[in-house]
Image (tube, rainbow, N blue to C red; front, side):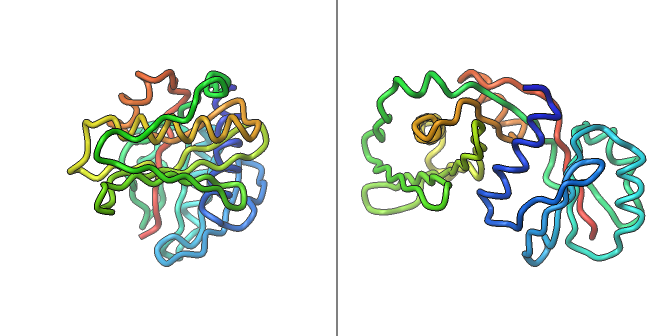
Length: 213
């Protein structure tokens, strides 16, 4: 999967995961109506297109509109129009094959934790809690054709370095593979990128966000 294909697959799965409107295809990528305060809509470019970024950001004056482009932050920032700023820190679009997960039994939660998994409307969610019910970790994955998009993976700071992130990722991968997905994509933070690379994920391209203030 090349970076442009991965961006398209990620857009499809991300919009399903977040329950947004269907992405609208444009000449430079996609526009998605998100419909949240502070995140009204999102433009996602499939290639490093300075002219498109300048046109979008110079013509958009309403706050709460986001943009993502497959370039590093230091490349994107000079392209942004007045009133726009980088958002969310550096991101990395990553992919990994999911075939190996088909032959693995779903992992069990470590001692002191309980895992629950459920699927609704094409999105599988995993929740890890302590035995007394406190939140420990979570994540979700949306299957859009042969590609599944991992989203909103989080481990509570008090429960890190106990293998819960790997547990969530393995459980999500197994669930997506059982639904016929063969490839996974996600957008990682710098810290998450280190974890994912140790489990077979590879970085395809930077994916940097910006927002109209």
